[in-house]
Image (cartoon, rainbow, N blue to C red; front, side):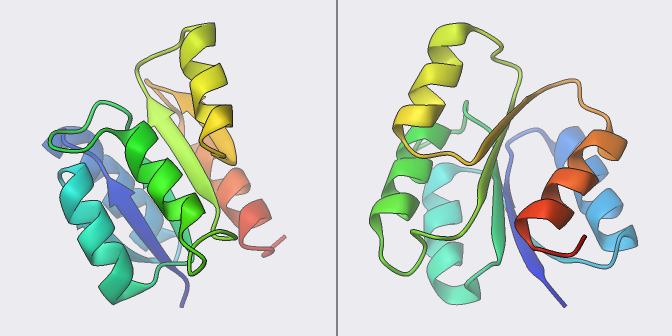
Length: 122
């Protein structure tokens, strides 16, 4: 079973993501801030990350950059899922090597195909 780490500080969004992904057959690890996401990444070794940008303690940009700089996670896909829709935000996500960028509100029907593509499950 593929493991996905979600870093999201909104309990509502986290619950929606968690239930959507578990129903689709994924194991889900949740983190409510960037610091917890980085700590859990090392222990859980997920197959994919879904990161909010506006996280407490360490923001999503820093988390993504740190993961991509770490040889253990350099090739692990990172999907940014955020309410920030500005071009500058999208550019910064590219700069930290995020693999994809989605804005909230989101449709699970749009997210799941992206996950399957990154995990090569098509």
